[in-house]
Each structure stands twice: as structure tokens, then as C-alpha cells.
Length: 261
Image 1 (cartoon, helix red, strand yellow):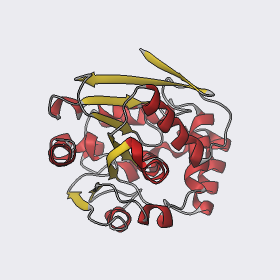
Image 2 (cartoon, rainbow, N blue to C red):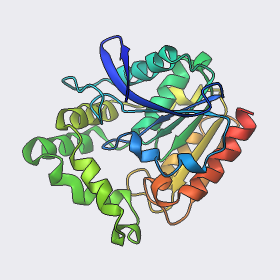
Image 3 (cartoon, rainbow, N blue to C red):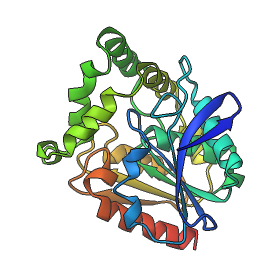
Image 4 (cartoon, rainbow, N blue to C red):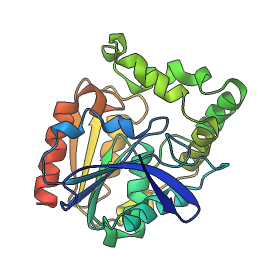
């Protein structure tokens, strides 16, 4: 187990692959921890340094009192990359991880050589929607919204499989304060203007059955960045690295090969 002691936060992270290879940093979604990428990593090419971390309030990282400004989550990622001397990285962000990727690319493009915006948007939902969700969690815990969340996250076919239940367990076992803190960060974020100014190579990935960040939102977001690419994974929901890891790995490998060499 590895813990990065940063300025004001301790983040749990893991490294795989070649420690001397080009770094690839993964930022996971709301309500998940770094195990989100477990099925994907064995399918990716050798020769890269793969770094995963639990954002604040999730997994084994610190869970300070919220709310968390999005700028704080971006700063955490910035500090982690600097702490690990992993600059010139490709940042792969899914959902809120994709918001962090956009914020980091706008603030510190010198740390990155490219970004992957997976199942995300420049703005996700409305403040009113997130306020309602946070009120529901405060009243009934994460369990109160687990079933509708699973319907948005996963295709109907995947929800009939045994592995599906592990993802529901992961969601409800996240710290409530951390979940609420990150909900507040998403509610207050609108990156349309800042993302349109990004000049880094960018790949967008969407799932055709995603009920949280539909394909049109992902496409609209990545098209803000000149020269970007977009890939749709049919039959997958909000977490295509879980439902369709082989297809996801193929798209990501192609991007890594061209951008990181």
C-alpha cells in the first residue's frame, strides 16, 4: 500500500508497469476507488508506468470534511504527479475524473502530454440535480440512491451478471462525507470555456448505454478541443472499462501509442 503525503491530504495510490516508462495517470469516477481499472490494466501495453489513485474522500485516501471545490481535486492530482515525478503524463479521467483531467490540462498543461475524457462532460448535470442527490444521501445514506445509480451506470445486460453486485457494494461503502464532497465539486463545475482553450491531444470515450453522461455530452465536450478524437463503445454504460475492457483497452492503447510513443 502506497500513501502520498501531500500538502493537506494523504492520497492512496498504486503503480504498475515499467517505473521508467511514460506515465499514465488514472482518475476514477464518483463512488468508486482505484479498483475501477483492475480489469483494464492487464490488457494495456507494457513499457508504460501506470498510476492509479483514490481521490480525496474515496477508497483509502483521507476524507476531510466537505464540500470540496473542484480546484482542490485538481490540485490533489497536480501535487500527486509532482510528488511521483510523473510529469509529461497522459491523464485518463472517467466521470469526475474527466473533470479533474480538464481542470488539470487547463491549469498545468506542462505536466501532461495528453488527456482521455471518458464518460464525462465539461458540465455534468445541474446544480439543482446535485442538490437533490446530496439531500437524498444526507437523509438515507448512499444506499438510498444505489439502485437508480446502478441503472444509470450499467447496461441492462450487465446488471444480470454476478460481477455487477460488487460495483454496488463499492458504491455504498464509500465514505458518505467524501461522496457528498465530490458531488458538491461536480455541482459547481462548468468547464466549457476552459476546456475550449485546451491544446493537448485529447481522446473522448463514451458508452452507448450511459445514463449519467450520455454519448452526446461526451462528444460535445471533447469536440471543444481542436484536433480531438471520439470513440463510442456500443452496449456499455458509464463504466465501459468494466463492461467492455477489451474494447476500451484497444482505444486507449491506440492513443497511448500515438501520443506517448
